[in-house]
Length: 390
Ligand SMILES: Cc1ncc(COP(=O)(O)O)c(C=O)c1O
Image (tube, rainbow, N blue to C red; front, side, top):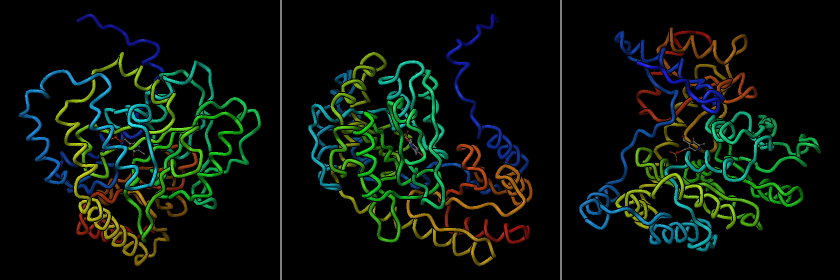
């Protein structure tokens, strides 16, 4: 076989940090060990039945067997608009302010390619969701990181950005409820962000993947609720987490008209829109019964309580996340995040994600997912107790 080398662009893509750890965990599983996987972010619950039923019905409709309209069906865009009005009191124009996406990841990777030229500056949270780096690499843009520190509730401190960085920056990624820290944003923070964006002409992309998952009575805020946000940014909303539809690949971007039209232009060249039956089911998810969402949030909150209470009881000083389905735990003194994760995997057969994989300010932490049952979380705590390392 002739081996064709990948392009320079492909070679420039960031390496998948977590691949090595996942491979090691698989080896333990193959050897017959009972590995508790708290390292990944794959929702464990099924999609609610009424959404699956809508897909089944819509899949049988021959109209859905044809190409979908390039920019998606207008009923799905209208459902996204109705959802934003119902949940956040935000009004949107379905024709100009909504773009349908093949999952949030697609939008996050597309936006730098839509708005940046090689060498342009983009501001990115550290620690942050690694997929942001992929779109930045494809756009050949320069990344400037914004540290998320515990003392600032894992919000970036804009005072730390140099005037050069602010002058150069064209785009900023934010994500609250936050992966990996579990922090939530405040109204004041979003208002400050809008002001900064206006002052320096920066486009804000708020990744609202965990929008439905807030604890202790907190309903996470949409960035678009901040006055003027729609003028300077977009929000990406995925159905992956809210409705356990990660495998379905469906999301949408809402907000600034010029960004939405650039996303649609790029997508016109890349794809035809999603399978019509998926769009019908997605519209049903957004506008149908919402008790399933409340139930899901209760389930994650209950798991969070079990995990955090359990870890505190064995002497590990941990802080409870306010949202998302991750806990961000400080590693005990004397270990790096990678060393500690390796010990947990090799000696307790528990997989967690080392914080360093999310950026240098993730060092000193591990990310633990709440995507296993309470029994498994209790078992994980008991295995950690036996190690006597916390
Ligand atoms: C912070 C964050 N953003 C976006 C996504 C992408 O979700 P999807 O592509 O399934 O919509 C994820 C998924 O794990 C995530 O954690």
